[in-house]
Image 1 (cartoon, rainbow, N blue to C red):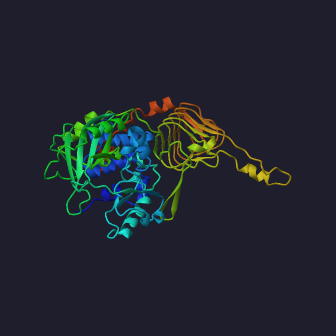
Image 2: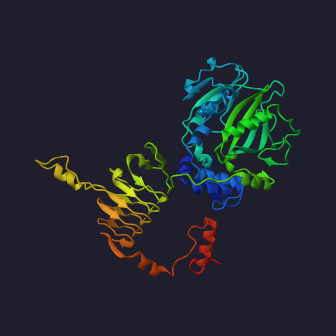
Image 3: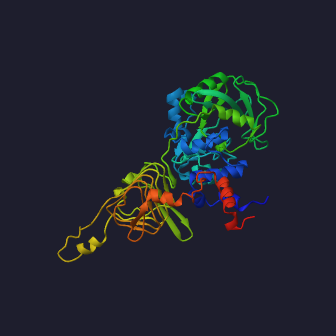
Length: 485
């Protein structure tokens, strides 16, 4: 099958990891959605279950979620909520594959990473267990941040580990069906059963049921089983436990196993298959979506580069010979308001803690903040002068401002609210609110009202439209200039 250039640019499994990671979360989700689902994503008015899961990825960043998706840490949380008797024992915890001693594990066990999906390695017999293949799989998984695959936010800050657990199998079915309950803030609405997952001779089966365990004519990813399962012995107990564990969470899928008449907790999944798999019929997607009431947005937004108030983060992404340093400076004292747009990472200089940027402000590319005068160091190195000599000063940018590309802002500058700084400016003095300023040195050109009056006939009201809609509109609007037929 021939793939378009867009596919290779926006699909995480084929895009260079460093390049895919550089995309903003919203852009990555929207492009991946269109590529997988086949139609544009509506984040402004999401209706379906899958659409709302994308919204939750972007705007519901409850710190608890990091614990819920961590397959190691969640065990303690579950034990406190419903009791340790429901938690599968942990046989070992490892930071690397070099720490794993198979001789200390039983003949049948499971190895898996705590921070992802799909890295499970099952040993039913040590004599036939492919150790090298399993360790290679786990080692590869440890090196990946699962968040970047589909931007499932909850996985972003999980510390990768490998855990070992006993292998369970039901004595009657010789399988381990997985009972998965769709839960909404303590209310369980639907569930499905996954079986034949560890059978290499047949495909995994998914069968959906209502709460009375009536089989539903619904398909999602995998086919239905040839025969419908009988209602499990511990069915009501699993519903009760799923209700307890999902309290206070807009939506979470709670998974359980039933082993020889005993219930064990499996995992909690906030984004069912990343919210990017189709339901047949699609009406079921809308049905699940009706129960999902979206909470208020909970995130610290800086687009396309995003920071949260966490410890300093230093990462390096290499593109050929160029290296971009992304510095998490919030904890250093850099003050940034909400809805700040950083087109590229500015140069915040050596004193980022002297910089304050207000709400709803956009900083274009190649912008430099200079909070000191290095010339003072020349004085300090002269005879009989103090080498500690320096000149420093804060920089403050108000609310709803725009700073054009390649602008330099010097120390002791205060830029007011509703200010536009033209590209290439050197700002060495205060700029009053409601002004347009530009130049070297930067000077006030006109007021914001004068700018508005001058350009009132130039305004085109489509700036926040979805990309494809905006593109089509602007191409049509400028058809003559673009020579578009």
